[in-house]
Amino acid sequence: MSDELVVQFGSPTLAGIKTGNLFTCPYTDRGQTMKELRRLNRALCPKGLRILPLRYSAERVLIYLYRPKQLEKDLAGKEAAELLERAGYRPGSATECVVELIHRLNDLKSEFPHEIGLFLSYPPEDVRGFIDHGGNRNEGCKLVGVWRVYGDEERARKLFEQYRKCTESFCKQLSEGVPLARLAVAV
Image (cartoon, rainbow, N blue to C red):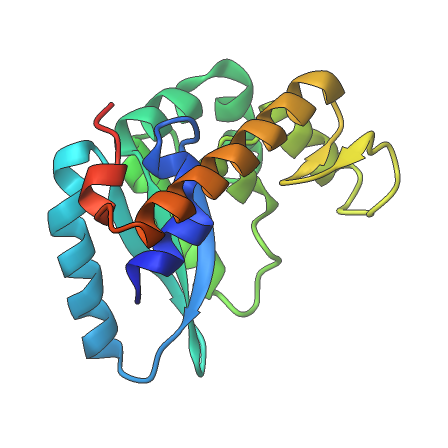
């Protein structure tokens, strides 16, 4: 897994303006993928970041780059905690919630865990709106961007633009030789 991939799909999290990002990457050897993730964690953990494999498929792995301390705060919020409880999560730490999310993503019999948005800094009102509308692409949705917006459209537009600019800037810096560990902001 290249640093370029992490920057391309995780810049807002690296910058500390988003709790987490998900992305997939190809792999051929699970052991080599874990070796790469350990390398990345050695560089990123001192900055308050973690990178984990959530699910392996035949040729791709779903990667979660996140800030554990921020995730703890996000999931402790009243509306987020209620959504998680409604989805069947037991009250506990953010780490326990990530473990449960991994189980749900790997359980082929269960539905896709739409509460995953809570792990990615999506506003709880938007996660709730998506779940309540059954994932219907148009019903009740005000805006589609990084996520489907059911609540504060103006705030979402600003965040989407902030994420875009951050990604553009980080990709440029990486291409100019700034290493990933220097791009990651300690928060």
